Image (cartoon, rainbow, N blue to C red; front, side, top):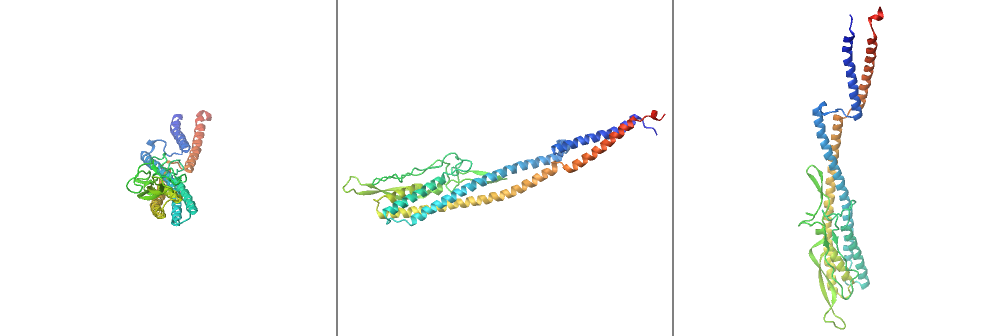
Length: 347
């Protein structure tokens, strides 16, 4: 049976061209590591891939939010623990302080109380690692608390009154940390509070009365003294005023003792409110940890599913391409050799 050159070409070339096309596609797939080079290749898989990619992007953002929130809360927790320690120190100091102590002892304890005051003021004005004030709420670029101490520059017998602390952060609500705080989204319909407003912590629900002595008018010789009461509104004002009182040699013993007792009780109440904030932070950290576990598991599963759906099996693709290249080479060789044949070769 004789086969014309046209028939031979018509039957051989499509197979060669198909192999060349498939090899070119496999090369593109291997280079891009994508199973589908265009949406039309598999519309259903493309839609599934888009959905998975959207979920992965969302969860990636949640993971970033969780990490940042946990970092901020860890920094806040460290600050709160330091503040707790300073308040405990001030409380213990005042528990062992008496109006009957010598002037030298009272002066020493006033200096120690003032050092606790400075520590606590530094803590409430702490910044996080990003440079934001931890306890200023949304106004995180503004130092929240300012208080200028009168101790130790108070002069006697004309001691001065300490002023209430000024707050420049976001306003607080009627309940502990109910307003003036920041939050972060850590999951679908899930958020966590990542800052606290300490107005209700450092502020007193009832003012603490702390006296200081002034020279009576008209002046007498020897001078007589009268006491003026300061209604301390917050822990800074109270600690500063009590440090002044401890150094004041002209205060009646009974009034000084009452001020020591009342300030101790107020500091202990502050400690209780502070520890409530510490507990909230600890609970929030557990919430974030649980969210991180769930989100990372879901993220890993979706990433694996997307990879299985869209990425090329490199080993299989290489084997197939090598097989097609071998087949193509054999076909091209056979075609070339056969094309040279002619009946004139046998005449």
